[in-house]
Length: 299
Image (cartoon, rainbow, N blue to C red; front, side, top):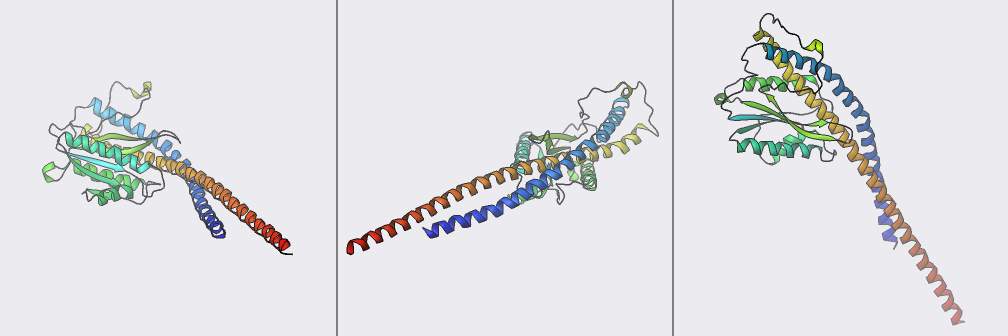
């Protein structure tokens, strides 16, 4: 009986230690997700302004730019997968990877060769464990993305997109990430990054945004050359910021659930330890009473 009590007390101590860790991680995620949400909000005005500028050039010019022109024969498709660097975030990374697997299967059904580009250690581990090849990887800052990483990824994607497929290039680029809707809702999403689809933004345009005439200096081609890479980088960075906010919200939820479960386990083991202790005391009392009765009878 004493050994059973010691076992329960050891479990209580172990679960209590785990509870302290999960509670600390919950509070850290809660503080960081606020900054992540703010970063998403701050990037939106720039993204909208850049979207309007690209829309203007694409609509009011007749330039056939490589980044906006649909290719007739698509044989290779790039898939950018944005996951987390760390675990303990519930089903966050697995949801993105499942969505990417569905996309990869659909692309292969269309006869396209898939070229993965991985962001986050979870995606890299997923592909390495299955011994799959991928084109490139970027890790180390999934919780707090930096624009330098988005620029590096964007430059690589633009370079590969403008390279002929027979030389290792790709014909289209898709991005799989998690869109941050709210603290309780984060949805895996797929967008086509290249060839460019100017589809972002659901708000009605202001009257000042729709001008009847546009003048491009020095030329529409030069403007597109300057704007489109910036647009790709900005859109990638927005996807990374959305993913970071989603990761932190998922981690906060997962750690809160783990903390609640730890509290329930502590209550359960405390109750079992008390029951075992009561049984032990009852047995000791019974032995004392039995011994006293036997002593009295012997006299």
